[in-house]
Length: 242
Image 1 (cartoon, one colour):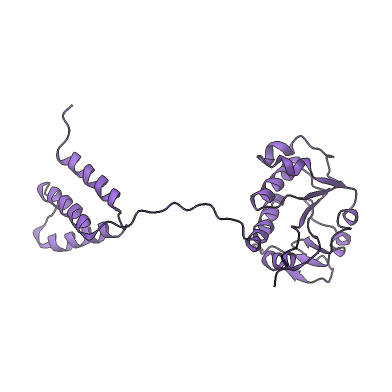
Image 2 (cartoon, one colour; image 1 turned 90 degrees about the vertical axis):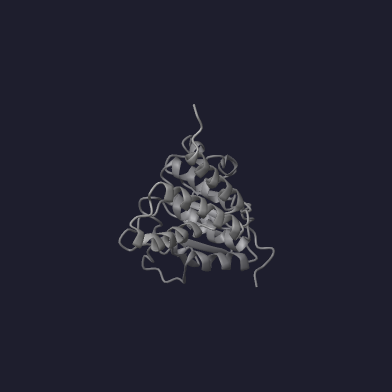
């Protein structure tokens, strides 16, 4: 049973190389409701002017990002640390997929850390050793190159599913048109096609009419769509004089 008091996890980026990737990671975090970022020894220092534009509005995450010299310092207050890596690097640890890790994060009463290594090399063996669990994103073994922000997004998304974020509002669809309206539209089109000599040869007329009806019955037209198409047919049958 998930704990109602489990705080949201912190996203820890270890030695990130590009400010743009830090900004994109912040954007991915905010998309799914995560706001706590910690940075460990970013290559180009911090703050980084390249991060802001890439954050696309998630500037508050960058402004409140915490800076640490070592990963040990960054996760010192965390009760559960997940090292995100595509390789176990010789360290024997439990391995979880993002959805499994999300369940554990929500079940933990303490603070959890989701740790991501630098873009080029990933986490070092000693850094993975600090974690209790290895978090591995299932990925194509023939192409295992996952961008830092993409990795953050996948993990954040799985966390958000457990969190129950509100879904975007759905647009209500109009109900399907009555069969009589659909029949009227089909009859109007068939009349126009008959006058244009479309139904030929005579031996194929029944089959062609069936195919036409099947085609026009597939979309599930609503009342407005039927009216619109009938207006189109009327305009074609009786062009307005210019």
